[in-house]
Every structure is written in structure tokens, then in C-alpha cells.
Image (cartoon, rainbow, N blue to C red; front, side):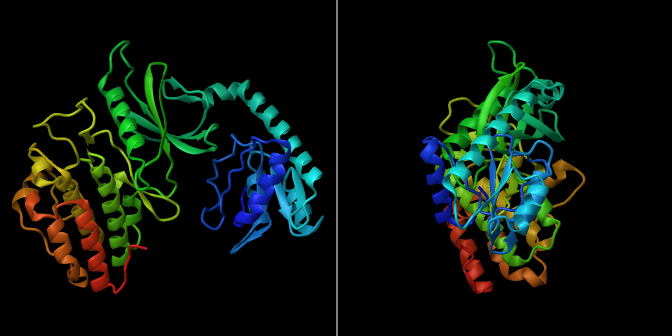
Length: 414
């Protein structure tokens, strides 16, 4: 249901449960959440209800867009008045039904839902037996039921990423599919990392960490199902104008997420802009725990003395294969903060080993004059040794808030 009024949503839920006690109404505020991505067709829902108006928006515009999408779930439009002009526009645009929001006709409402659900059930059955359904559920060499492939997002040496729609979750998701096949009765490295990533994230359950929905194997290929971030990653956000307030707010959110995972006994070990995702509401989520080190798991995927990570964002100790702790992730956070404020990385070279050397030996670079007031914060995060940095992520959170209060005259915690 696309509606901003929680009390009205409760009323609709009451009407539905009179006939279907187990009916589940999923509410999405159009004020907080924008129009769904063009690829989304609400395949997992029986119907989608759209209210005629909310602060800053009109439902008829959503109806025209959603109902015109091939394969979209039946749309029920709740108009301001019975049979008004917008009701007629909604029906002409493909809406399944148009009902008056102000004076609900109980039986008419339930009949509209019943016919919509029947229509959608038949549409799903037709799709599953269609020639295109098998191809749409193919992700590389893996056939994964219950997911409709939208497009491939990226391909790497270990896995491929696909945008898909989950029938069960009723949302767009990302499928991370391992390239290598599992060896029967053995755990190959890619599956071990998928398994570790899933167990870590499921245990943490922090708002600043990606949501993982499923883990499985199909055609001997392991796959992970995770949250989709339409707004992209921090790297994309950094290509836009980024004022100091935004830079500090993002840094604060990442520091809070690090505090959450560190308290759970996890080190991220590959913190970089590409692993910080932006949600539609502006909040952030950390992804890619495939290289994370989890003190609570006995299985070790990486060993002491082996270098994993991204050179531009590695702490000096990580770059040299030394033992690391939570303060290594704080160093990576400092690199990102410097980059957001200065619009360039602190240490640069075409040679990865040269970058690793500079992290340990080169002086911490000075920020541009316009943002030089944040130098103490950056310099502490970028301390050459762990003891020179903040003792933990919680201390970093307080330092970031203090810098904002001092230099921006506001508390960015809210």
C-alpha cells in the first residue's frame, strides 16, 4: 500500500482481515520512499494500493507509471471522490479498480482485492510456464527459482552481481553468484566466503549493515541474495558535490556501523567507497564481508601474513601483512574522510606497493585550507600506528560529532 497515513493503513488492514484473517498489508510511505525503480513489477504481491494524494505528491502520477509496466501487479486506486476525473484517468491508465478513499464500501473493496488476487495468481502461473521464465531465472550458469533476472550489474573473478526481483521478498534484490562450482562434499573457497558473509551479517543485524535475505546453491553454484541500493555506492556520491557537513555525516554513519560490527567481534578489512552503499533515504550500509575476520567463527578464510584488501584504503599494518584490530578499519575510514574533504586520495601512485609504502612512511598530507579545521580529526584517524588513532569506533563517533559541533555549529547525530 502506497500511503503516508498510518491510521488509514490500519483501517484498510482491518477491512482485509475481516475476510482474510492472515492477510498481510505491506505499507510504503511515498514521502520517505521514491517511485520504485523502472524494472520493478511487484511480482510477489496480489495487488498494489495507491492513495490519491500525500504531502508533495499525487497518486495518479504513480498509477500512470506503475500500471503501464508490463507484468505489474494489479493496481487499486483510492480516489478523493467517487468516480471523479482522477478515477477515470486511473482506469484508462490500466488500474484494476478505482475506489473512493473517503467513504469505503466494504464489500466493493474486498471484491476488488479478490479479483485482483485472482488475476495476479493467473499471471504468475502463466509466467512460470512461459518460454521466457526459464531464461529470466538464469543467472550465469545457475538457475535460481523465485527470482526474475533484470540485468547483470557487475562481474568479477570470484562472483557476478545481478539485479533481480524476488517473488518472496516482493522487492528488487541483488544476487551475488559464485563463478566457480562447488566441489561435491567439499567447501570451496568462494562458498566458504559466502557462508561466512551470510553468518556474519545475519548475526550482526545492524541498520548500518547490508540486509542479506538468502543463501543457497543452485546447479552447484553458491549464491547470496542481498539488499539492492538504487542510489549506488559512496564512490558515486563522491562524484557529486559533497559539502563538509555531508562528508562528516556519512563518516559518522560509517563509524557507527563499524562500532556495531566491532562489538560483534568482526573486522571488515576492506572498507572503501565501493563497499559503502547509499540508501534512498540517505543512510549508509556496509557491504562485502567476504574478507571480514570474525572472532566468533572457527573457520579462518584468510591467514596472518597474507595481504587482503585495497591498497589505497589499507592501514600500514594491514598493507604489511601484520596483525590488525578494529583500529585498522578506523584508518580506512580516515582515508575516505580525507578523500571526501580534499577530493583526492591521501596517497597516490600507479604502483600498489608504492601506495602501501606511503601509508607507513609518508607524512599525513594536509587538507585544503577551506577544510583545514578538520585536520586533527583526519590526522588521528590516519595515525601511522594503531595507538595513535582513536581507541575504538565509539570514540571515533564522539570525535566526529565534536568536530561538527565545533566547526559546523551543529550536531549531525540527528
